[in-house]
Image 1 (cartoon, rainbow, N blue to C red):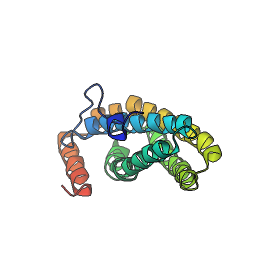
Image 2 (image 1 turned 30 degrees about the vertical axis):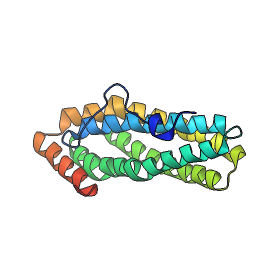
Image 3 (image 1 turned 60 degrees about the horizontal axis):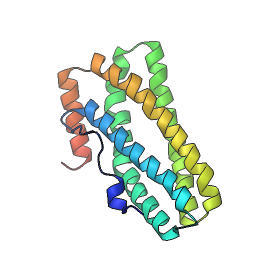
Length: 172
């Protein structure tokens, strides 16, 4: 089995910093995808290596509870509000859809954590599949549309403000 800390090493140089908020969001998407893949592997090892499975799930949950939660706040509190005044009706509906998807994913995530806490592999498998499908679709649409909207609409001073807010959320 691969040690938990090695599961999440960066691939492909996804290194967006808080100085470049849109790049940071994309890099965070890659880190979330790495956790999703690890959570899928947990299902495969649930019976053969339960301790390893639980350790991997716990590591993924620590990331999602911290960095993942901050990522959602970055979008909903800093990026979406700055985009809304400048985008068309289709794009406004897209932002509303993303916010609803955040809420739906949060609910499924809580159910998944509950299944792990109860050590219920039968509940875990369909929940992890659902969460992974939700997140992957969501991330793909953000990478394709949200980031491009941000590049098109957000000014350097707005991006600097987003960067400052992201740093503040992280205590930097």
